Image: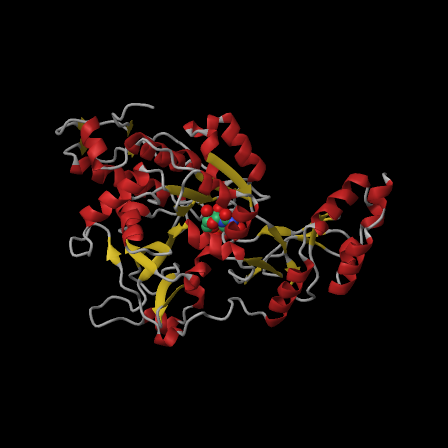
Length: 479
Ligand code: UTP
């Protein structure tokens, strides 16, 4: 054992004492040098000032930070519907604007892929889960393909920042290396890792251990993106690539349309700091957050924070009062993210009561069946109230929203639902191009070569009939 690992540095010892967390070292005498240095390493990166905030939040047991807006007085903001000729400016102008931005290399992309995928039962990145209905391609391959398709169409690469976490970083980097970055130019890919936060015992406020030399840590939520991107130099990296707008999306939605030209066009034409895509929520019980507006401020309210009576309220036209279901596809100006990253308090912490495995006093690993601990997360949509201007664009879920959250056999958002959504989407685009598909036959659009129905039409003559499962590839010349 080295001397350095034999002692707890004095500043850390006093931070632990101030926070009342000395018991986190209770297995110290039994640890070898490697175990001691692992534990010290984890403790060293805890921000002990922030830890006080975690303790305060946990003692109040208040899941959500105070609302930025008064819900009783809030409404659903006006939404531009994708492809609606009634929009001002109209779809054609928006598409042309989006195309100009992409062709000028002004758009970058941020993929958040640090989640633990606990509901799905992931051991490692969710991005590695197979989701291509015919190809069996994983979520990373399907999503990165979309960036390649934009490059082929517009001649400019879209710089991509990928957020990982302690749960996904090593395997994501390995996959990128082994797959040749799925055909993306590595100079246009920036991988950055979000921070972890400790889980704390709901009854005692103690930091939990899940091994004698390991804290029970969890990634700090998709909102961890703001600080981690900034600290990793990612915002400057985008700046060096000439990027002015950043579209963000999640790894578990293979239908996501972050680079949709019309969406980008409305974002730029409206001079919004923050634009976001929504789908229409039809039933009060749908578990999606909603975009709301009050007094000129916008916010996303999680479904668990929307009182049932308000969630069920309908307008005279039959639509839910709060119908703008957030699907976590956003576009920010880079200037807005720069401003938000410069403030320490941009994103508040949310509290989640979860079942977290932990070591008891005797060192036995306990796997609780019911919530025993608090985890802490930041959400990227909490930037919305800080935006000077927000644009909301409604899309049809069948065009751009097929989230993979739950294991097979679940009522919603399970692999079979994602499979069906991708096949339905492909069938619709094929039908638009005059291509028929035999009943019950799976088809898949190659995301790297097919952007839209025009690419399908160029690939297959009208009247083509597809009788066996296949991946449809576009005719765009390879670059
Ligand atoms: P979810 O909130 O659905 O979480 O993430 P999850 O980790 O994928 O799944 P569960 O809740 O453990 O079952 C939505 C998106 O945000 C990313 C995820 O990778 C996914 O793309 N995310 C979530 C992060 O990048 N970091 C986080 O800390 C949490």
